[in-house]
Image (cartoon, rainbow, N blue to C red):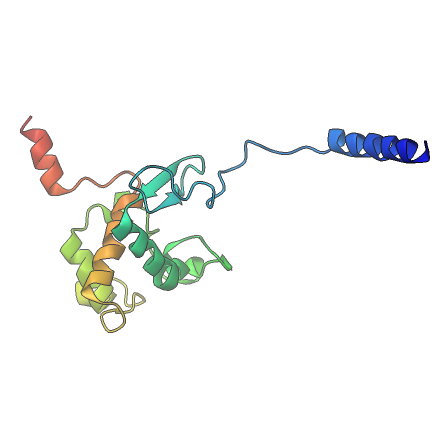
Length: 167
């Protein structure tokens, strides 16, 4: 009898606590749960402009994200895994890595050159250091693939545009 009474009291207390606890289901998606969002996707990125949109990434884009998180996030994002970035302390302020209005204008060869040789090589900010000695050509290509995947507005390659115009 005592055991049943104690069980009922504990049950009532737990139900009371549960009824006063609110869980927000409308929060942004959890990256680990959305990691494999579709067949053929190796990873994903939460859209920086719309946290409810998940961008599926292919293998090369996922490798580019890894390099971005190691080398570029400190100046080309507003936040890092460790907290705020250093972007606001750099003059001129670097473009966000997903800023398609700025970066979509630059061709892949230009991006490859600025990443490998630094900003002064292309008459841009000398604050952009050269990464040609620490990143391979393939690393730089995967980084560019990641940049193109997360661009907002989306990047349209010149070859895609030509094909679309011929229809």
